[in-house]
Image 1 (cartoon, rainbow, N blue to C red):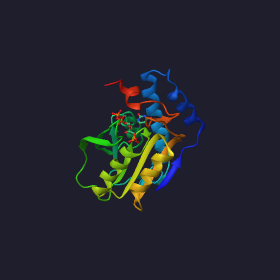
Image 2: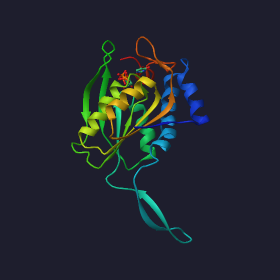
Image 3: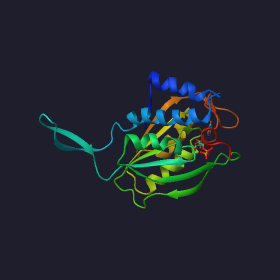
Image 4: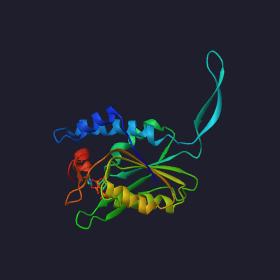
Length: 210
Ligand code: PRP
Ligand code: URA
């Protein structure tokens, strides 16, 4: 599995505001979308395109457009939903599938409570969105779901990750084709498996405590 850790002053600046516990939900939501767009630039580096010919007002020229089948974007509910608009702005022709997952805070195992994905993902490029890669359990389960449906290539985009999460994801992926794009690699996990220094509970900060 290829791991890309974004290294850009604008990302670090936005991340700093995002991490701050005083940042209110409206700003937090906006920053998650903006960070997704910046990370989306890295995540779509190998998006499939095909050659086209067009005419500018001055001359004919060659260009590219996104290939079919369209890429599939899969936000992991709830927190991944905060990244969806940013990614759709980058890939307007993409289709969107949904996975709802909740980490059991005692066992730390992910429970899947919703799934709306195409039955057959053969030949599809898939982009999974979740701001937090903590133990890696949720993302590993999500990625397995997509490979089991036939996805050829999976790119996971997370705003924050840990060494433990990367290692769990790498074990799950094995030799299948996957890339992980991270906004930052944090130190690790605390005794409640929260990312340190992290940003707290991403879902709660986006949508409030349910
Ligand atoms: C958070 C986060 C990830 C998961 C990460 O979601 O958005 O999906 O935890 O933890 P892991 O790497 O240890 O599995 P949560 O389960 O809190 O649900 P939410 O998005 O509804 O808040
Ligand atoms: N889920 C979150 O939202 N934050 C963490 O730090 C870990 C899991």
